[in-house]
Length: 458
Image (cartoon, rainbow, N blue to C red; front, side, top):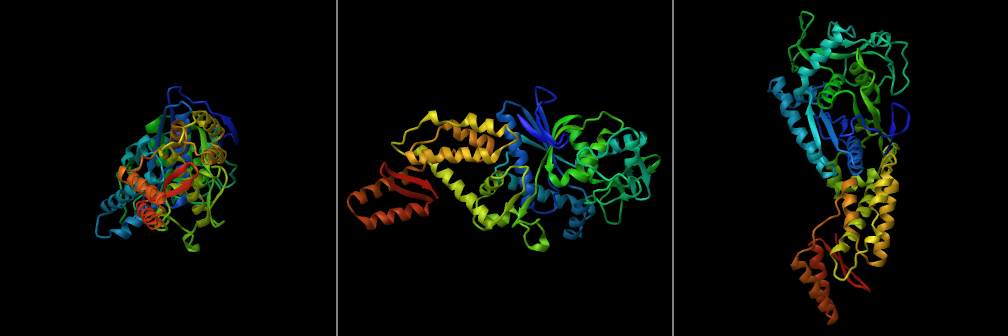
């Protein structure tokens, strides 16, 4: 299997650190609101990677975090629940959006049963330990508003800061940044721990004889959650391209300071999802969630298919037209899969494409090419009125997360089809149309072909 590794800037042959298991960490959601479709696209990419690894014979341990304490969660929880204590408000808000996120993941075909979710709030003791180690080793220092990581001390120790991209190091340690997210591509010391501000949730932290009542910075959270669950180094770290800097670069620094050089062996990043060719923004009115998609009557799996139609390392463009086209493709696939249940339709196992799909996806998750294989396969089946092989349908489900293995229609619906055929034979067109309408109301479409009547789900 081959994957593009942001660390090496090239497509590498994948080799796991432990032959028994691939250890994989994905940066998860900040649970303060509904997740927007750009973030969902990153989770689809990570889910697909795990699926292809499993289909390639690997056992995979996949960890994803919940960021349930940071600037955004604290600010939103205070706004939403002003009558509660800061700690109670934070828990109430983040618990609500954790469940919404899990529901969204299931709806878009991400197999959450194959993932382990870790909470930042539940991992604070590990963060205090790592910060204490960094301070003892001289890589962290106490300031008036918290504890900061010294990039200059890291560089002076012989480590490279800027492993994932080239950075301007001229201003390193000249200034500090205390907010959890920033866009400047210059090296600045970043907060490991932030002392408490008024009306914020806080945890005790004894360091160098001081009680630094407060809470962790954003970057330290993922370093601790990943290493505590997977050990260090682990195999694969995934996330959106927007996380390369500062988040992932800072994770590498604080995780390798005074230790071995490797935090994760492979960094796999997916490109941005644009909306109508532009970056998603609430101010532009092009900010969408899965709820917006469902309100338009479009299946969440159509969104998944739209994302997979583009390679994960290429920008994809969300438009309602593109999404509707993906829904049409999905419905076509479903209608061909339904040939499995048609009477007098023959299965041709020689047309199975399972191995070709997996081989294609093993080449850096080449999902567009794999989708083209499926389209061609289904077009041939439809033209010959042949049913797909069970193996192919199982493979599509396992690697794409799109389940075409539906159940047969009910005996009552089959009886309606039989009655309609009888009405047509008797040239009772009125009754035939009434029965067709009745079936359509139940989500069953009818197509009369030279090989007989073929039904499909609408």
